[in-house]
Length: 368
Ligand SMILES: [Mg+2]
Image (tube, rainbow, N blue to C red; front, side, top):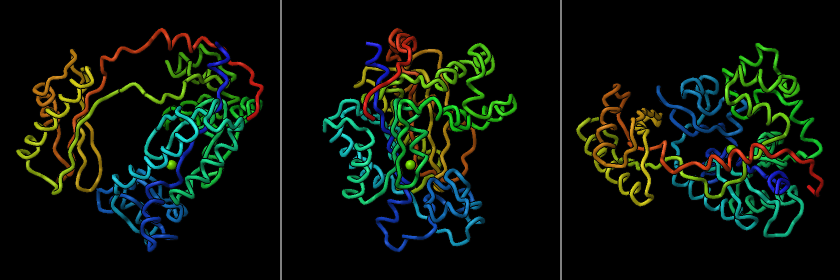
């Protein structure tokens, strides 16, 4: 039973510069050129950069004006999320040729558990190669992959030989791989945590490993325990094909950007009704209401409020969303509004989680 949990062959597939690559594929004029998907205006933000743009230091999440400063020839194109979704579905279908255990992380990334797979292929490395080849032939885009014993190591590895490459971290290599790893590469370590770790003299996995669980928990709370385990190659999170819903949402994109609050309220009313319908269909309610605002320059703002009780009623959703709308002034005209509800009462399986944490890592001996 324990071995069943720990002995996995996991592939993390990550498309290369996905949005930008799609734009370059669909429009030959953009190929080989520095390209940013996103807004180039004063308030615009880069949501993806082509490799030609990355050479100049252009990165996603960078303000458009800054990107333009770094690369004066930078071409900005508007994102086409429907198109990205379409291609993402196409790629997902390819994954299902190999396994049903597919956990998408976003439109361009997924974990695959190929421990047992539909091709009967014992080598996860070869499967990753085949998948990347198939994506290239059927979709026309390149992907990178990381292959290892758990999701965490697979994800880190997929970055190693990017773009259009893959890396396998074999079971017997995992420990050393993690020891050599810069802590900033550890999942969940953001800028703040990284700075804190560096200050404590924790630069690599090896440094991290030298700290006791108590020390890490004291300094990093719950995440401390996670770091303690992960650096020892313990990451038992399964590939979850049917991820439990964490939130439910309804949103609307407007054909014309709107700036009038009256219009916004009108739209919010119908969005709240739609969300209520979805909540009823899924038989859930929740406590945290989030208002999502996408502005005409494509920048995104979310405002949340957690209520002391569970709700699913359109009226309360609308009231809360209104409150959030008035909480702050709008930056400019709005192209999308959405309401989502999280903190759902779906009942987490706490017992199962605990069991998983108690399982020990098992030294793996099988073809990789
Ligand atoms: Mg990607």
